[in-house]
Image 1 (tube, one colour):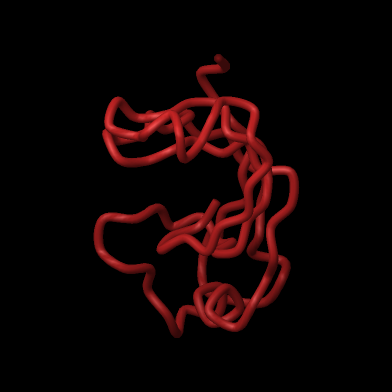
Image 2: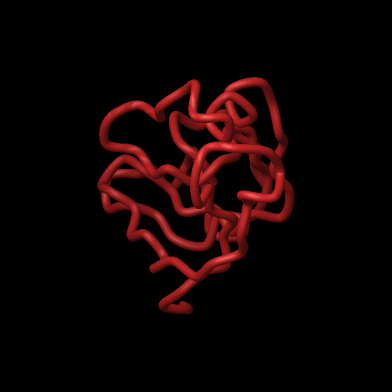
Length: 99
């Protein structure tokens, strides 16, 4: 698995011009989590508010915008039941912090 992923970060509060491509370390899933290789992400109200500096992500989650994602499971935490998810499953998710 790759060590880094591409992401969009908010460099400061403002308009769309403050969105910049960046590289971030690929997160490792916790015991009850799966890691999704993102194929698509939605942009919604909280993402726009976050970009404008009017919304802070919940404590403990990434600051990357994008709460609605779809993609493929590429890693699983030890406690994820194989009967529920499998490597390579195509999934969609509403997550607490950006994808």
